[in-house]
Image (cartoon, rainbow, N blue to C red; front, top):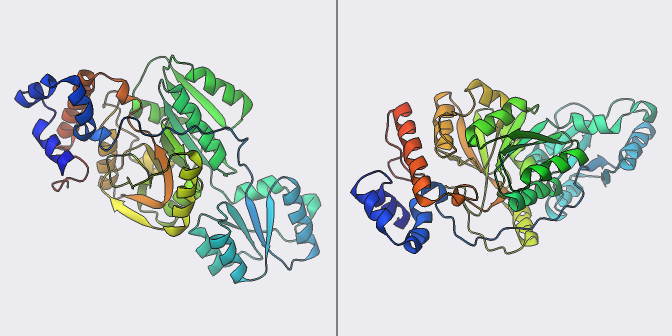
Length: 408
C-alpha cells in the first residue's frame, strides 16, 4: 500500500509532482526510489549478492531403472554408468517415492520397459524427471549412451543479457553450470557493449565450453533488442531470458520445462525469487549460496507442480517456447534500453490467447536493478517516462503498476 501510494503521488510524469520529487535531497530519493520506481519495487540496496564457485558443471543425470533386467539391458546400463551417469536401481513404487521425496533426486531419467503409458513416470515428471524406454534389444555394441540420454530432453537455449556487471555475470554463468543438469543446453550471452571485462570473461568461457555462444554488441542496444538477437540465434525448442544479476537454484530448469510441457496454453513462465516487483517475490532469509540452494531444493518438492496465473511477468528470468515468441513477433524493440517490454509482451501474449504463470517450485536468486541502478535518477526517470508513453500509445490505455487494483 505504501509503495502504491507513493507511485500514485509521484506519478513519474512531468509537472509539479515530478518537480517536488526531484527537489528532495538525494539521500531521501535513494531511500524512496525502490518504492517509487516500479521496476525496482522491493529492491533494497545491499541485497545479498551470491558468490557462486565454478564447479565443473553438472552434465550428468541420475538414471533410474528397474532392478530386474535382462542381460542386454544390463549391458546398456553399464555403458551409461561408464560415461558418468549415476545408476539407481528400484524394485517397486515405494523405491521411487523414496527416491523422489526422501533422497531428493532432482535430475533423473526414468527408464521404463516399454513405450506405453506409465502412471509412475507421469507423476515423476511433475518433479522434472524425464522418461525414456531402452531400445530392444539394447546391444552394447549398438548403443550410444549420450545420444540416448539427450533424446529424452528437449533442447533449451538460455539467453543471458549482459551489461557492465562482470562480477555478477560471472556468478550468474557459474550458477547455470553448477545447477543445470540438462544434456541439450546452449548458453547464449548477449553482451551489450560492456567495457568492464565482461566480454573477455565470456570469450574465455566459450573457448573452454562448447555450450557457450557469445554475441557482442558495440553499444548498449537495450534489453529487447539484445533478447531478440539471442532468440533469433537460439536452436532450442525452449528459450530462457535471464538477467546477468541472477543465480539459478537447483532444479530450476526441469521444473520450469515440466510446467510448460504440461500446459500448451502457457505462453510465458517465471520462477519465484527473492527480489522483484511482482507476485513472483517470496520472503527469504538466506545469507549464503548453500542456504539459497537449500531453499530452492525444499521448494522444488514442497511446491511441486504449483503454478500461479499472473497478468505480467518481469523478465529477470522467463521461459517460453521459441515458436510462441516467434509467432507473436518477439519483444517490441521500441522501448529504449529497457522497461515496459515485459508489460508489453504480457499483453501481446494475452492477445494471442496465451497465459502467464509463476512456477512456485522453481527458485532463482535476483539482485535487482543491477543495470538500471547505474543510471542517474534523472536519466532513469526520462527513460521510464518515454517508455511509459510508448506503451500507453500502443495499447490505448493507462499503465498500472503490477498488483494495482485497476490493472486489467
